[in-house]
Length: 336
Length: 285
Image (tube, rainbow over all chains, first blue to last red; front, side, top):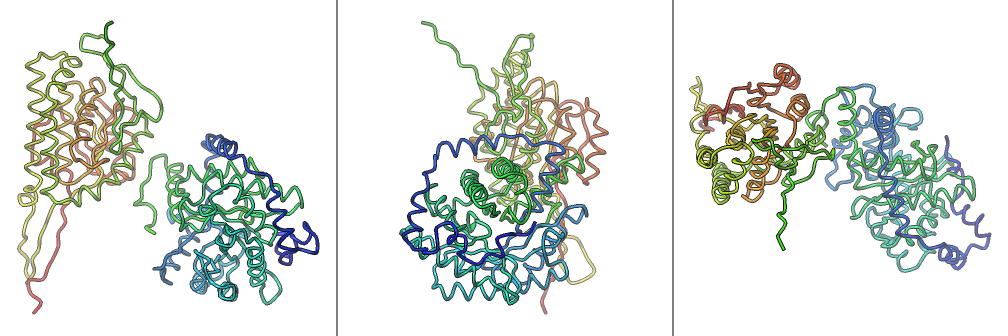
């Protein structure tokens, strides 16, 4: 399925929903007019979904699907081209002992490592729907987002020019918490514009809300709406640099916004929980939550991703257990 | 008003914590005269899996501790065990039907075993290691290094405390972490020993105690790819040849079953070590 949103001009959604005379005031009225989140109900629902038992053939299906939805990530100050190459090798062949293991959806690196990732992928660089691997780059002064708009846009353009298919941007949490929704909105719109390639198509834009810094569920809901209205193709929970990172209730809440948006407009917006998802069991719970909230059609790489690094190894160990019938160990997967 | 006694819940010992079995199962432990003694957790394969994960996490810290420090910690186990001597005597009397004197003898032997093996911690390398003569200007040294995670089936049916100590303590000396399946019929002293271990500076996960059926759990440990050695001392009544075959798939070191309670020996320490040989130039000139 191709993203319907990628052909949209930035801010077009907001204009359609809120009218042509889009002002900070109309945006604020819309966001503050959203109903409050029932925190207890949300957490109960998430806890209920986490109790589902997924076994045998369903588990095998889930494990493979989790791999296909992973953005294999390295976002360290110590990243080197060599480390990116080994990350790409792992993305292409996650488990050398089992060639039937699917490839991950994308590798996610810092902007300056995009050329190294593109070169290492070579002919395998492309759309995950075709069995290829995309390159995602974090941009806009990741992870803090504390830089001028000009710097953020230059950061984004560099990554897109270097061949990034997806841009993971961070919102200006300071402006959001100060109530300055207009600034956050305009920055997302500007970054989306900076995602435009020479041929007029857009790199997919994932908007990181950094929910761990937004403090309340109401803020998460508002930020989700804001990111969608401004033209985000994905809304992503966290950078992975702040604790708490992705949690099941927060992801459920963002999925509900995406569902509401789909009901309202028919458009598909993706969700990416990132950070803190290390065990297959946790990842399976996310799959259940997606299937039960927005439907199984969302369980594809253009609409749902896991931002993770160590999760892949745990999934591979589980796959090996299913295949061989005995427990495997960390000696049988790579050291990252 | 008469006071109700508070019966103890015997749980597993995994990663320094006392969880119930993941499966929620338990089984009745009978006294020597057939009467009800207690309920113990009936560990499942997933408990064994969790125990191996805990043991693996503990290997780096325990094997990285200095030999002297490991010796001190093992000696501390003997000290704490000595302080709870009466409890163990009582427990052994109830579960194994021993006389007070026989039970006391077994507890004393267990304490002495800890002390004996504690003493070896900073000495066995000198005895088992070697400086090898080589035809060149090199030092050539062979030293025993811990194998890693050792899965153990404790002696079954007699001397439940002493049998357990005689298989667990030697594996700890070199710096291994242990997952041990206790005596199925007499598991209570094993869990009480776990309480001693938990309060004597032994890092969590270095020893993990499972109670339940060795026939059920041992095959999972034998085939587990993250277990480095398999001690089948108490597995004589099991299909232990199959266990040895399963262990061979992942090149585990295997110690074969032996009847009764094994005597303390240096061989038991060395059974769970690997020899590392290093070459070093004698001079840079």
